[in-house]
Image (cartoon, rainbow, N blue to C red):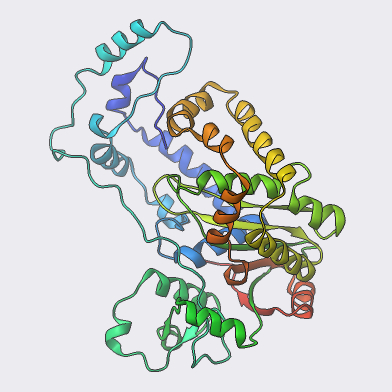
Length: 401
């Protein structure tokens, strides 16, 4: 994300004081948020499904803990500043009412002598990168009574078990949340080849749904997800338009699942696209009929992966997406984001060039409803029978990470 600073106090930015009382204030705010992190079923579902796809230990699925937040000291912040805040690793953006030449002169005056601090390396350190999200686990030939998205391989050798992968981390997440034994959890490996997918589809196994029990909820929150794209993906614009087809006023998700079938209080779906790593496709909503809702949602997504949107749907989605740019940049900081990100990447122009065949090709490549991970947050006594009645196999996930 761009780091937006006030050039009036550049030297304070270069050598911040990091007072302990200010740190304590922000720590208290984060700790208070952590106390309420399970108040929202949507937040629970998103946290769980992110960990299942990226792996519990991924930097992209990391969640703060009370112990970790409380342990941060002013010296930790100073160490971070010393390592990461340097001119050759920064981009400066200025927005407001000013004369450009005068502002450039002031920027040069205030920042021209900014150099890496003594002791910093010659080059900025490499930004940490995590593994991309992994596709769901698929059943192997020796699978026992475990979720169909886990392959239990009884013949795994110590050598193969000694080299954990991001996918194995995700398997261990599921195993831990289901309170499986460490020995059993250690025997899971992912099966991701197309032959395994075909074998699974023809095996007659019921698709898995992972349920987080929240007793007393009158509405369940359903999420289905799979690995997605990053901001530089060539299909970015086409998938952005497809998200508009799903979510725009009168879009497919709202029209089918809420208006016509009455299955959802709220529903949405689309791709996030981080600049530095693959994001996720996530779709879902709030419903009192989770089984029927999930079945209809998967049917709609399957049709979207196989059929191009109509010309009317395409043009409506493009118009709404383009119009949203004007409303998304009402503040000066958002205008700066637009200049630094959207204008430089040409997003509006990219949207305008999208055609039906572009959306159809991108959907076929990036949308696989039958292979997505599904997490439902709801009252088990009500939710589980609804899901099982339409053919889903339900497996529990613990609330705690």
